[in-house]
Length: 621
Image (cartoon, rainbow, N blue to C red; front, side):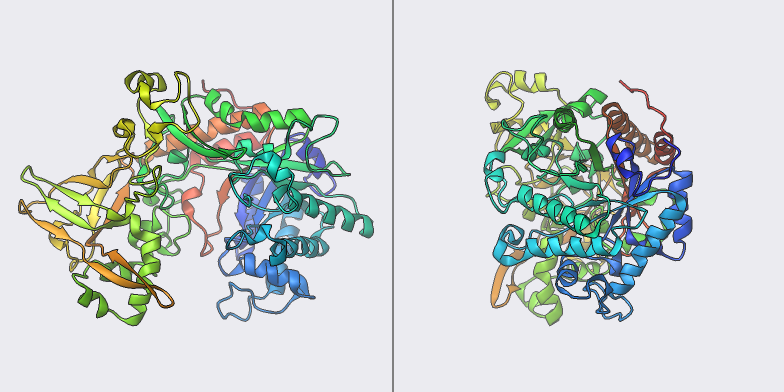
């Protein structure tokens, strides 16, 4: 890396040459040991920049309601009002959070590393961000102007990432239709670029790099929303910047079955996925208004390159810098996290969890336990008013782990039914969400020729993606599993204290376990159907859980670390080969919203240090 510090003055040199090697960090960076933390990232790890999140910092977070408050307040960041995340703590004001940000910038200035700011901003219910009458878009514009007025000339500030993973008014709009709108993401991005450049002109200050992400949650292909037949190297892309200092960004978490295994309810059932992946994986994504269900391989560096080729082509076509704003792979077994996890951290907060920290999050666990004891409507009605009113919300957050029926067979096995993963109205998502298959594409086509639209199809809507396809049985995961619950759960006699490796088949909703000792053949335990409050004056009928599912990876700590290391190595090699800047996701400060599963292991930290030093990695395969 060049020896000059990364600062506002040198920022564009770094961005334009693909030399930013950053990490994502929450605002807890200015905690009691902030100098040590930031120094470790800058000196030991070698990062030359921080992608600093306004959100995910516990009570110091700045989320959508706070963005609105700052935008609409004449005091802006100097407001002494409590933030919306303060929870009654009068010391957590906008001015106090601003002081924290200033301290982080000052510390990074002294370390010679840059900071660029990023915010999550909800589209709002019903897509309010895309409705001019809602004021959402204007609030975001005013927020960035007030943020720029506060820190725009700070020498450590090297960019603004104006929305993390933006969406669209509707995914089924083509890029041409989106560009023809007046209130879509390209138009809002252009308005913010114009706002910032106008402010700089009026204030007489030099221009700051602005980071703009593509749509579809930052999919590598989604930068196409700024491209089209009428754009070329001479015209430039859709966005126009008189200062020509826009950095285009995407995020990389493919294949999700590996990178997000167990992270949330959508990928809980993929726990145990490996890298390199054998066979194929379903990559589901939108592109230019069309849903795609593509079967891809992820066994070689060339597979990574194929997945990001659209972003690379965009950068070369227009001569603009490309930045990978996030990339990572989760550590699915929290007891194996490095550094060793303090005993209390695994249950502090459920944000981005494996999965909801396995039913033990303090605000969920007590009610989950009580629901597993409900045997009838009368039992449910006997719960406290708070429990009855909280049941529906808890159901929405945890239902994919609710075991609603257990049946012991005559062969020494029992079948667990998870009724709430069965969603017949969702042809693609019903049952267990398993996307990987150990067979190759050629093998699948040979065995199931009628399941593909043509002999060479890898994308488009193919019948194999739907429930009911004979190919379903070829897609499965094999995590370790337990049946858990309190000692007074309906299924207390069938709980499993020791994990068993099980098979979860795509679109299925039952799991076969070896029955515990003493289980009586023919035993059937069924959850009660109860009417529960689902909102003001409304109700819903829900089958209660009789026990809960617990999944974990069957891999050893060494196997998990090697898979993560290999994946990250392949990614960084690809970023270097394409001249991309990048930011690892993530380092946390153990704020209440931090999730340690994304932490770099010791081997990954050493790999990141190698890359941040400017040394080129060699290709694995």
